Length: 359
Image (tube, rainbow, N blue to C red; front, side, top):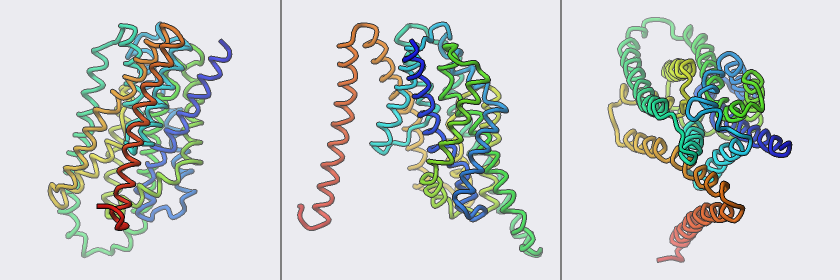
């Protein structure tokens, strides 16, 4: 039993650090890309502090949802917690290897639901509400960003008579503050993904779990988030500082609201929707935005189902015997290996073609 508990905490801490590296660090991408924060190290520290603060101030509601409002907490055992966390980690690992931008929150919910389906006990009404808000909140973010973008476009010419150098002083500060607020919202919402199953089993109390998860998510953001910060910073350099403030502020406001309701929410989808709304206000609807929306819908569908299937297979396989579990794991590894091999072959063919050695 002690070994199982140790494994649970190791997986949870690893998962939390990946959440920090992948999602939490991105909250300062707008401020970093716009030059409001020039040092990458400073941007990551601001993100880490915001995440930890958000977790301690309001991370308990989402943790309660993950730990006992999707499936009964009486079902959660250390063995099942390990499966749920391992499935979520495995899903994200395979997705990263395949280049699929899966959502951490959706993967975690899918993993918990997979366990509930395998054991024939899911709170379907709560699950339907969560899934509905996964659609409604990003749509709301897009609408609010579009309205804000139109207001910015209308008001901008009227300010041309004023000294814009004054604005250059407070806009970077406002952009950093909204980015910090977005990091706080990430801490409130995403820390629960790593510690919810542990809280449900009773291996750790809710308050202790929040502190534990908040620390490792913040640590992952500070130590491992540099690459994500650079990538997101380069993606949004076309935004003005005013637009960046609006996007970060809208994302933070909506995610904090969802966190207080106990809804695990993909922050990246909310931010992406706000960026789409801003672009529509400035340039209208374009084919690039259509591609982004299509990708978001695919991520929304694939993320929970991916981890759901893995958890379901591991629970069913683990309930029988060791050989059944080996068979289930082999199927997943074979699937991943086949897809990876196909990608390698396609990459090799493209390389040969570009070098003149192909068809």
